[in-house]
Image 1 (tube, chains in turn cyan, brown):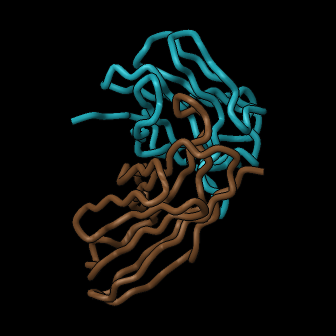
Image 2 (cartoon, one colour):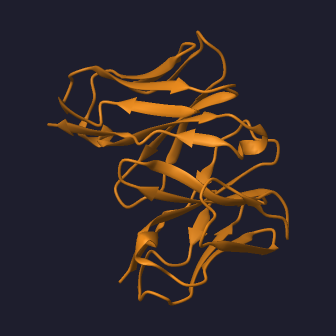
Length: 113
Length: 111
């Protein structure tokens, strides 16, 4: 069974803290994505990666960075968390070439106090 | 501006009461229209992809259709286990890197 695993389901952090969200996929997919999901706004793309060490900005990259050192792992980093980054974060993967489904993890709900 | 709008925001049905969810899109170049199901506390799960106007796809009680302006997700004789949020997304770019998601329709089916 294909799987995208997000390491932390729930996190509570303080303003200014550094936050790491980890995502691992076991499907040998080239593409990996980080989205955030907020009520009424749908999913918005933060960053994506189509290869190891490659990254591209999505629609809302400000305040975030990413790391992809291995094909199966894609990390989202909040260098200095702020309250407006309180959200549900979803990692996804897909095969190179698009035109196919995204496989999502179960999400990481981050609260920044 | 590329936009995907879903309606209604929330829908409550009795078990067996058929209905449709709407996804309208105004995008510059649609490569594919995706439907996902999302259960509370979970990530979205793929249902269908539609690529051209007139195309239809079915899975159990669900049927998705596509026109040049919108897509419908028809639910026939729904059951309580169909309760979920249904998301649609328009793919604009190559390689899944430009997907515009709607905000979703939260469906509740009462027994």
